[in-house]
Length: 314
Image (cartoon, rainbow, N blue to C red; front, side, top):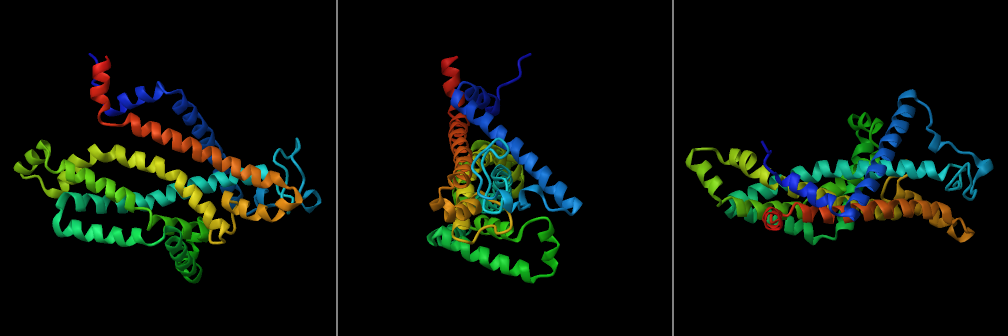
């Protein structure tokens, strides 16, 4: 007996036909493996109470060009640039995941209630995201990050949190999280407006199912793929935003994020030390490129029209 095709099965078949999407998926797999290795290295040193290798200074080999011992050279403190790039991957993934933990609940909840209930609820939500969207994003993120970092550093209760998450990282993620939900909110709102008048929703209402049960059990599974697409397409923007913030001096201070490395390396570019800046830029470029290309392919593959299109070509 053949199992019925689902949207995800059809999408996977579509993705496998696109070589570029598979290449990008393989690149993302390599980055994910590097991220796991970097997390292992970071937490191993943290739990043992020692300074991790990527933070240890060796001034006798500072500003060395690429070699077999140091494929990406060393920086001004004699730290291996490759180790710094690897830890930058950890920071990039942590920023994407932590920020998404803020963006997705806010964007989904506000978009769902606005699209389903409409009227005054919809008006209030639209007004809220219009106000947030009218303020320049970088300025709003910087303001929120400054406030959050100051609150964390002054609060004794938050000191326990900073043992596990850098205060600068937390501030940046909160800033981007509370400003980045607007796009997802608009998308979910539009989908709930479309689904609330469909036959399966009307039938559920006739059977006495509560509004929140309809929203979560009936409509939500039909818009889940949009959240995944939005996450994939927003991830590169989060990485680039952190780089801009670090370049402006608002980002992560105590960890080697790619933005912090670029901001630091620009001061020695006039000396001809291109390898530090080049390594961080290349690492960021390939991750952002792979995510953008794979996100576009995933969006095309999860298009609801695929069922009809594949049926016609079968």
